[in-house]
Length: 243
Ligand code: F6R
Image 1 (cartoon, rainbow, N blue to C red):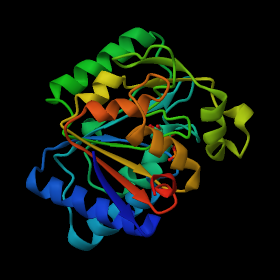
Image 2 (cartoon, rainbow, N blue to C red):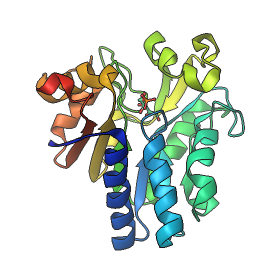
Image 3 (cartoon, helix red, strand yellow):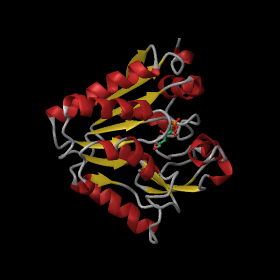
């Protein structure tokens, strides 16, 4: 794993936004895997600024988000689809048909997960997946468990993960859906390149375990040790337990 430590969340966002913009310029039809959450907000802000300033062209880029809550429509506040609209999609010239998202209202969940896997494969796989990390070591919504699902699947969220998402539901963890659909571990590990971003001291334990600990299903992010092209981008606080 390549490790990069930045003096602030802002510096990290600047560096990654500039790397993503460079990648899009080199490969205008690239396929991106994208996270939601508190951590990537600064990244999306920088990408939008850079797009306006430099006229970055997203018209051929394709995206697949990592996950979505079960039971929420794309328009419902709190859904990851509405988060992405607010922070990125509404501000860049991504074609609607190029935006891949799991449907939280799908009646047939298994068919929806299969559709997502097929759509990713039809796009030629993911070139670059950007990940956050949960304080419990989850990536996407692959929660710590005795066994991990390899492909896109339905998942019951841990209380810690629901608490981590309370922000999008008026600060009330009880309003966070109990289930989500998530790319699986193999779906993520099949991406040609992985960048994991983490900021704040609340992530320091999980980050240190991911880098220094053994590979274990109880810390799903530790499986990134198996991937040949992973960059971990941290601010000082998230790197606190590595020193
Ligand atoms: C969300 C996702 C999650 C988050 C993680 C960190 O799409 O994939 O794994 O990246 O829960 O969330 P924040 O950034 O809110 O701390």
